[in-house]
Amino acid sequence: MFNDNDIITKAAKLDIEKIRSDFPILQTLVYGQPLVYLDNAATTQKPKSVLKVMDEYYKEYNSNVHRGVHYLSQKATDAFEVARRNVQAYINAKHEHEVIFTKGTTESINLVASSFGKRFVKAGDSIIISAMEHHSNIVPWQLMCEERGATLKVIPINQKGELLMDEFEQLLDETVKLVAVTFVSNTLGTVNPVKEIIDKAHAQNIPVLVDAAQAIQHIGIDVQYLDVDFLAFSGHKMYGPTAVGVLYGKEKWLNEMPPYQGGGEMIKTVSFKKSTYNVLPFKFEAGTPNVTEVIGLSVAIDYINATGLDYIREREQQLIHYAIDGLKSIAELRLIGEAKERAASISFLVGNTHPFDVGEILDKQAIAVRTGHHCTEPLMDIFKIPGTVRASFAFYNTEEEVDKLVKGVKKAVTLLS
Image (cartoon, rainbow, N blue to C red; front, side):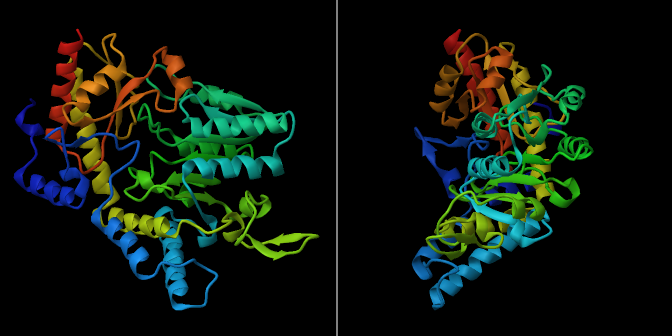
């Protein structure tokens, strides 16, 4: 389909086949055809090592953590806390107690909106988000603003899907208590200048939360370099299990914020008159945690580290540029979002056809893509569209799969014209 320079070498192909063999689901047949999985922004697939360690936990040392003196509990607790240190190292947090385990990005953001809001936000204050946020970084702030009498301000974007930074600076005033922005747009693939955002906000003593759900698996993140106040991400976006995520928070903020939930583990003492709260990180980890998922996340981080984030990013950039070149050869196709800096997602429309129709035709060719508004309805309203077809890539995808996508979209054009 393209020139010889775009064809991967035999050695590279052998490497990718080795990588793909680590992910059992990639050998699946759909309608009798090999699966082409291009829905990685929704959830990534899991390597054998992650599946193995989670199975071992339930078979060999299933037990609650932190509360038992017996062997199984001690072994589970050790594995759980090793995972916390693994996360700490992965994002370069200063302290391991700045790593809070949650159910995912959504709960992490809700935790901050609730606890930070109760302590620091009052009537007349404001929160800044951007026009490209996922619903999980919109609705929690709306709920908090309604409760506290605050307002929500939105950083606008241009038609390429890039933030208008001059207008962001104009939004920064004495009413702003926090900026909450995505690192990478789940719909457009735009990589936002989060370091610049953080620096500009901090110049006015405004803390920043970064939604890293779509960045953590593509880009190396150093929270101390960024100087970010809060960072949220999910395990299932980074080759780990579902129902586990992380909230990183600077120690000073987490100590000042009230607990998000009450129950076991987050308490120091309890009486009918008054309860006192545990130290970090346990203050924000009420109840029995998702032990096996946390251990699985730790091994997923090991897998990423062994593969190398630099390699992952380079490989995904090759794929996304290859895919954009191929899709642009289709006259009827319109790309939604063409930011200069982007990660591994491409959104598009085909003529005047509904994205669901294109998605169904691709599905019948064993090509898994995402269709709809991608939990970014306000963004769809800006572009005046009902939704998009989104193809999102991981380092285990191949150029051959991209070729199948382009061929599949061409077939959709023929069938729907």
